[in-house]
Image 1 (cartoon, rainbow, N blue to C red):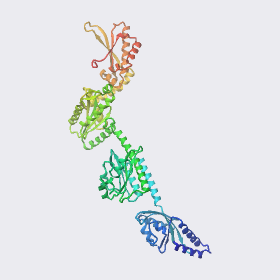
Image 2: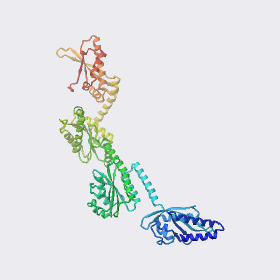
Image 3: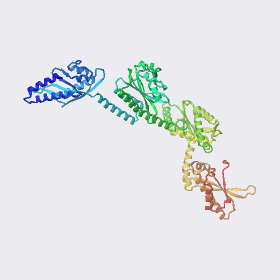
Image 4: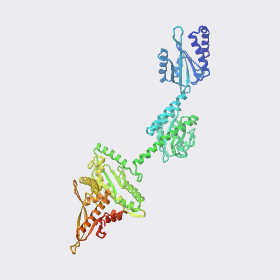
Length: 627
């Protein structure tokens, strides 16, 4: 550098009196050289005619070399620049020399003497000959920007990882990126993330560790002396192992780590926002060491970043479990069952195979809740779920749809009897007595059976067929199973039409009453009449009372129907009396559910007052079947 300075100074004496552009340029170079003495930049001066390059002591020390270790030639730079950057830098030089680029400024990677990479920012200006303007030299500086680039890269990678988290990318992909980010900050470091599930270490991500090592660690039970990560997750504290070969915590595991060149391991527990340990972040080197300040800080920040991912992942798992699992019984939920059913239908369609569907409903379950309480009802449902799982095969799928309704997807069906066998086992298992609230209770159920594709070739169709079969089983007397038949579908459709039309009929009082005489057998005398509801619908025709009264019970319309019948019958009784017909009682059938209604007495009182009937002339009846 002193030699270069003396050349510039001698030229200055020749040019000073003239104050030519060449003199001014030489003076600028001298000032530039002097300024660099107090800076941290490395100076280089490239003679474009001879390819000799002057490298300042600072330039050499930046790459780990002494002043006499590098030759002053372009080949020195060519041997130190990263091969992937060489052509790009030379093109930038050529563009500047040819005038395509007004300035020269480029970043490049160069090899340090100790083997690591140094990122430098190179800037330069041309020194031209006065007479013809030909470029003679390119003088410039190198600034070590490795730390700045590491910081920029870290911030960029960190932002990308946060975007991945926000976008809901899989945890394994994010773990991979986190490991690579910190490995990029510390060459030769290898990183690992382990998740903790019920005290067991589960592989999360370790892109630079051998798969065999990751497989060996996966599934290990954590404890006070189970390597670095096993100990860290157990204690909830940082664990720094300088030498795996000699540290007692690795005594039982070093035979796994040493063959892969792992010599030290530092572990930081990964925790959620409440402080619960979710896993551990591990850093490995192939030589014994303890972390410096930067590595220590990065170990902590890496664990925190991984903690965001693990906490999000566990929250998503809990959400999926809530969505796909029935909380009370632990069986599959309705949503998950429908998903499995859709997948099974597609698979059976591809392979032209069949499956059976059992739709199970407990008989008189409401009575358990009403008489023994909901706690007893919940206990019964849990026991029923357990029994259904026990009687089903491993390939079958059991779910709780809602309330006391369950479904079993019976796969691999060759004939109709296979599903019947499962149904029979369900009936027998469910009918085993159970003790509820210190009482012995014997459950029972009704089961509807449908087959794919015979009874339905879609999710909606097969579920409808099974549900229809279930109603058939209940109508046949409960505690049995019934197959799906076409006429049952027509019956269900008719029931639905009746239900829809009945609501309108009750609201608009489209029903009528007929009066059946009650006769004293020994005298033949008429002693009363029984009011009987009749319904003649324009499209449905004459609907039997057994159909529409049961429907009214089911849809909650029995109370307005009964009130209408009472008022109409009482008015008719008063009309008979005004017509001087013989005095007799008016009998009206009352639903048993109304006798449990607290407003029933006030309803009767109100009808009596409004119609003016003598209370002794009104008789309230229940059907023989209820008795």
